[in-house]
Length: 215
Image (cartoon, rainbow, N blue to C red; front, side):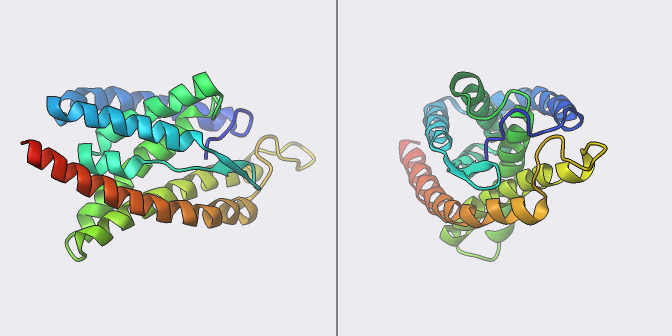
């Protein structure tokens, strides 16, 4: 899901940078309040785990790739705002150090996966836990955060051939429309979503028990 440079128009990524900066500034004010000293090592470990998951990318047709995320676990254990900062740092380091994802497209990746993915994971859990057993709710949280993040990225990419074309009708940036990019991204990520759901279940339940026992 790391969008490379050249795929997104300046009219999209420049406002996205502004939104990313504003959200990061707001989040830093809440960051320390959301953490306890004893949980910081767990956040660091999960952030590294997310870095590793998102570094293992498998290219797919449609101009993107599939990879794990690890977003839901961080969001459910530490809150969506902490998760947003953590994943933003992970994606920034991957773009700068590994060339995975572009510098211009960094805010698209960070907002889609870090912000939107974290919020979906957290609030879907809050909603479903009222009606469904925790293990199933955790699975759905991981699954939905993955699939809906992918869908948002697909929408951002798919709108480019509609909005940004030259005088002859040729796309200036990302060339594939919704009919190609949405199924190309969603279908392979169904497997990723299932794996994310299982991982979220295992990680959250185990760490909750560990922290509870330490307390």
